[in-house]
Image (tube, rainbow, N blue to C red; front, side, top):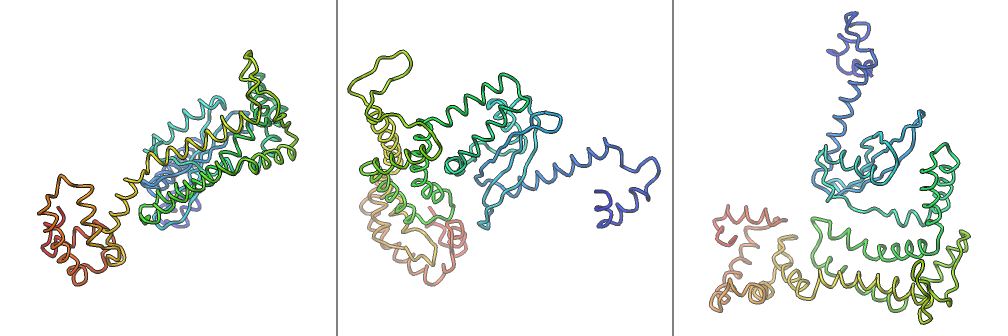
Length: 368
């Protein structure tokens, strides 16, 4: 490392290794570790600056080093301002054990130290990955059990493996994959700062439609796919016509079969909750408000500018700010504004640029 730095920086080369005083060669283990720590900190600070305020995903893995000490690796995945997806190895943390609570505590500690907000973490496509790698995951769990682990760790891993190879887990995993596959496009669209509002509204509508189609006519194909997956991985499929037992020690209910439980209480209930969430966040009034607001978008030389829609926006959603007389005046002002667009406001791409340009041209009263 010192040779590398010296080959690029003459001032460093004159003061290290064979060129350094005998008592300042910087080759002791403690000094080298300190140098590496400083370099690592600078790299992490650089990654932190590269992420900025953007949303990011975390990729975490735990393993043991040669001395059998538990450690956790942290990789950050994010999209740069240029639109490129980057993955950066961020840190290697030694932990006391591999329990979920311990890993969570250490992860939050690392992120907080570099002012990375937990609220900015976004989910990756891990459910989808687990569907493809279930066999490999089970092999890893078996290796952990056979390895030199403690009795408590073996019990924990055994329990995880048992759940992993259960019909209920596979059913839930596939259901999450189906729903997240539909809503992922919408999630990605809403995170884009430059997202076209009309396109986002279209994606909201299609997401609702696809979820409704899955709810109304997707059960048979979905259940068949789950059964095929279970047979492929030698996972026991329960008798769908048998009575479903609601928990340990509770009686069977003759009117509720296994298929009824999974179709009504899991499949339909989960999809209904997703549709309800979309309807509550994006109801007809909200969609209309956002759609009408597109008339103010300065992008593409105010291609979406529409006097009637802007007037409707003011009349319907801001009645306290505009009297009937002011609405008539607003239409006249918008006609002047439309003329200014063609002559003075070309090339404006954002509302910030628009406000600056209006101030430069003496039309700052239009900002308010």
